[in-house]
Image 1 (cartoon, rainbow over the protein chains, first blue to last red):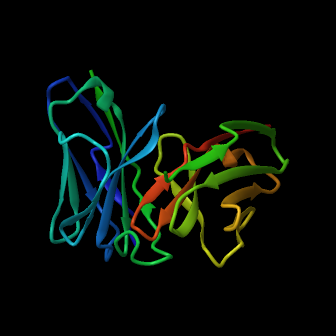
Image 2: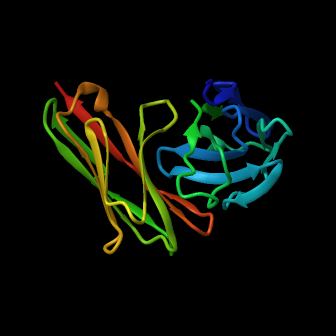
Length: 117
Length: 111
């Protein structure tokens, strides 16, 4: 079974631009969550999608948005990039939505390393 | 406030030695606790997952314990190997659909 894939793996943008990151979950998984990881803040939850609906949202500004397609693939968009948006963006898939099952394990992708200059 | 605190922040041990990483949480209501291993530049990989009724779970040389009364968990690594050098992240889920991450312990194994 193929794992979670994320594209692109590396991205360099300049301030003010926007960026779209893509995540393909494990086949059969319906939940996709996005996280931002920086050295200073650790892993921070952005949002979770389940069956094309946003189920949970972290404390990030509206510049961060996402969506999920009918095939469970998900995209994350960041508009008006700031220097502080430089981070590793991780996507995780799981069979069910969070809180649905005690053993609902998340499987992480390799991440997209975004650098904002 | 839901929090997950890990200690130590970083740890250096010699190859072959054992070590124990700590995780204290205040997440409520509790659903499960997971330990992840994250190699530099890669996504986290699950090591163990424990629910309220479990107090020990092993995965090879990794053994996790959970004390739901004191809200503490530990990850014990036996006979460490160079490949164990990584960050170890404790993650606690609440049954209210919240997932709280610890800041991780960075473990370095020296030959």
